Length: 536
Image (cartoon, rainbow, N blue to C red):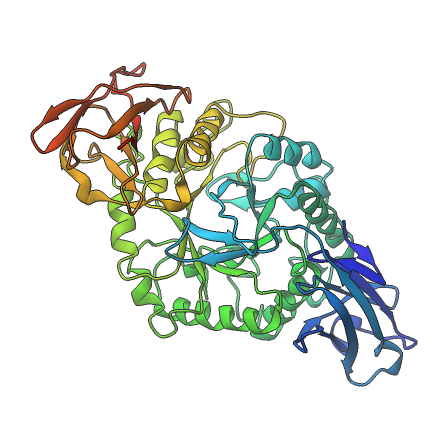
């Protein structure tokens, strides 16, 4: 829980200090700029923007990462002596994992400050803040997702009232315009404080639940104002992002800042790859890092998969910390069940990439009781939604699921969809059955196997080969380049989460396995996972 005007603050806890002006500003969001510099016991100085909260009050939120005696000093442009508050506070010891950090090449890309690895399992809930503002049961939904094992929610600060071709957000009962004025007559020099009070409440709920947030600062680039950069000028964008940073950068639950959903929409809302979008991504990532002192992960969410990201960001390879990657694989009537092609696209898109990756989008599970407002979801059925995240996870990536029930235009927060247990089984496999943080992709271990497109087994292994995992997307027989003795083998069922013994056929220089079999209602072969643990 955050603390207001504290004299003592536990380590990695949000503190909030109020500053009150004796002046009356006609336009308080823009007439004065307030920053507060915090001085650590070690001598480090961290400056964070304050935000206007109404009634002549500014607030600053800060989360210290060092114990001992701290001091702070507010400063303003233009000078306002009544806002230039000084103070001090003591930070006490607390056992905490701290902030999430990007650790490319290690532990699927992410660890907390404590060193604890995180296998990301998320849900895409774009309009969660808007749903809360319209009095939907968001608190109960967040509690349920946390209990179900999710540790991240993808959320956008601006609400998207429409997704083409027919995806209206019919659940909206209140205005959720985040600025002043209206969409027809916007005032980008002020913000909707009633709406931000709702955002504050949801963020604090995530903090209490220890549920991470990917905060998407700008929504789809095809919608206003992000498709109208001649109106939403760089000056207004900077004011907007500064305000978001001031209100939310201090929270432990803030796992990612993502500037724009499908960033290639920049600058004109036209969705295709543009090199100028890369320039914007690099520039805005560097600006956020310079403005947001807590050092949260800066991510970019892609639309087009190619060209490769190492090429896109070659001018400044370390500006972007992570890519929230989307690739749906096969998603048509004939092969949608297989989700084929995902691992090949990942390999091509991240050739030479040295930063972290999250498999953040691989379709949204269709709810047949809802109107088909986005035709691409038609064959995003449970079989696809089970296989796709396994394919991504076997490339060493955490996953973020998608359900039509919680996707943008819909907000059916009380109901879970059929693939939810599959997500839980996948998480159990990686966090209870194997040591995910020690595993790396190991395709070289496959000697032979099904080679039809989408059927090839995928492999992960520890460096010392003491633990090996194999995912077989559509059954069959395969051989591994391993000694014939010295491993215990078990099958893991992605549909039920059950472990059973695995029989091994031995050849002189390999181990051969045949999946236990089984087909779905349409006759497609079941997928299976194999776990090998070294015994000698």
